[in-house]
Image (cartoon, rainbow, N blue to C red; front, side):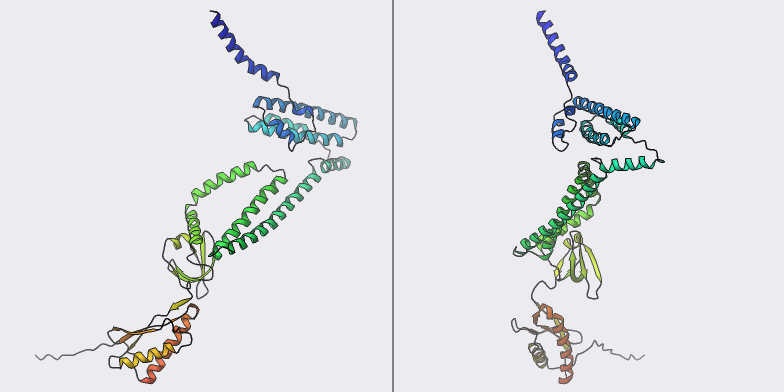
Length: 405
């Protein structure tokens, strides 16, 4: 029986103790109404529970009410209240910090905000110029007024400028560092440089917004949520992004090279993580998604220093084959842009319907490919005509049989 009574008393004490502790809590942040808002006040609020933060908010509300009463009495008496308004602005600044902490733990700050708006509202007679001047002066000189806003805006612009310069410096450092990597492509270098520049500037933008007393925490959280939604909606773009990374890593081509990708041949003008821009021989610009490139055959036309020129020439069945072969060999070996090693190949290749065809395969520098192709073709025509060799064209023989009745 005694044990049961003791257990009941213990449970009752445990239930009542938190309530007594809550009732016994005395607000601490209002002990100094000029408490530092940058570090001291947020540090004092951090360990407090919801009910304790509510008590702090009510205490600051009482401080604000007392100051608002002083301002009202001064206005009734017709005395200057600018100093009192400056003190009120300082109180409001700290009151809002407390309300923010209170709301972060789930507290309802709406009643406090309503009182805040009512207590700080200005009733100015628009027909009284001196009152308007006084109000403007008070706003300009207030701790959170015009001068402070101008200073904050100056800090905002200065921060953006500093981070802009910093992004350029770091981008230059990254460019030099990547340039020292053996085998690093121009595309990979440009990618790292652009990413570095944009990340640094984005960080600078976040820091600059904080200079305007903008709470960037919801902004960053919103960016994370928006990134998830956008990533889900732009799956095709992300596929192009992944393909762009693979192209940068494996380097199948570089800026300035001529390639055949996705059925299109042109010179690589630019590349992003989403697309590659080609300039066609007739100066058209074609933008191809990276996903279409990486998922298809990639031919790098100018990827090597030398290239073989493949040509086919034919002579008539009645012509001297050895003479034709010697003539073709002479033409390609004497061309100034044809390499001696490897030696050109000139061989009988095909007995076609109307001609005997030779393959002519000299080697040259990649940049001289078309010069060799066009020069050799012209010289073959001129020399064949001069030496009496025929370049046959398709012919068809028709045999007519007369049938008698």
